[in-house]
Image 1 (cartoon, rainbow, N blue to C red):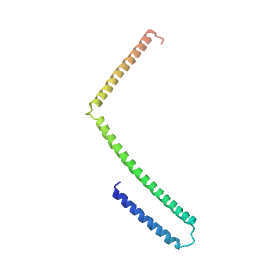
Image 2 (cartoon, helix red, strand yellow):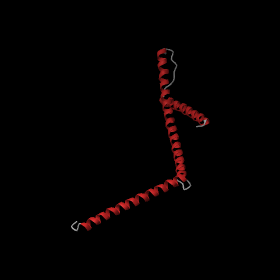
Image 3 (cartoon, one colour):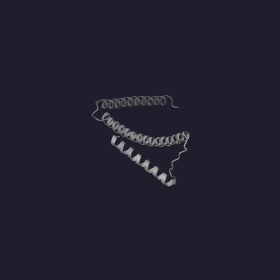
Image 4 (tube, rainbow, N blue to C red):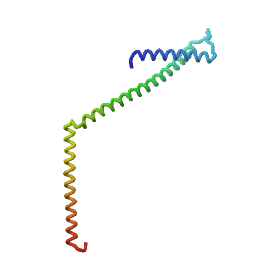
Length: 139
């Protein structure tokens, strides 16, 4: 992701956060007044609560960006794998690949040999059956 896009996204998120804060303040009807009797414990409680809200918001934003980023990476990886595997298969199983052509010829020869052996075995079994039938008229 380019740095300029990251900076623009950060500025937009900052402005959206400020707008949201203004909308919440305007809709709530609360007014901010100064108080002189705020104890240090109350002040720390307020600061830590605000920090917790900020951390929660940041966690949600980072989680959303992680999901978007993961989907983007996943789609790019899937596209690259599809392209490279298709290219490999086209090269590997083309008519120009001598190793592939030899493999095909070996398979054809193996099929021929097995078919011939099966045919001879089948013919032998038929001949033996004929001999049995001729030798034994009751069978």
